[in-house]
Length: 124
Image (cartoon, rainbow, N blue to C red; front, side, top):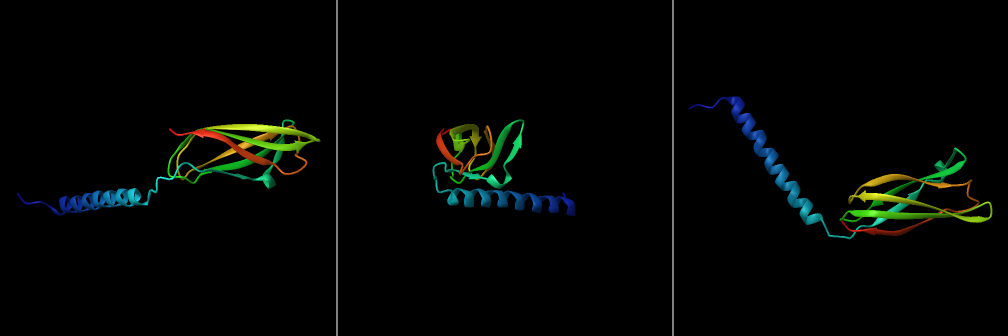
């Protein structure tokens, strides 16, 4: 039985897709160094704003490791009106190479610097 040109095109495209996928998986497997999760927090204090009587400070949390992290707990501390104030944020799941935007809340604008501590996380 003779095959038409469309069948040959579909065969070529399918073969290229399979070879490309296998190549990607091989390269990804070789490049994966097996590093533990490395959550990193970047505060955006210049984008802080007031809403509903609270001072909100946005931040981006990035996982620079090769493994996911679960149940990440972050604690931000700042001096507000002469008293130490803390704000805590939990992130359920953070895959490797991804980031998530969070917001820390305080009673008023902090008097000085806001510091963030990673309290802990769990490996899935």
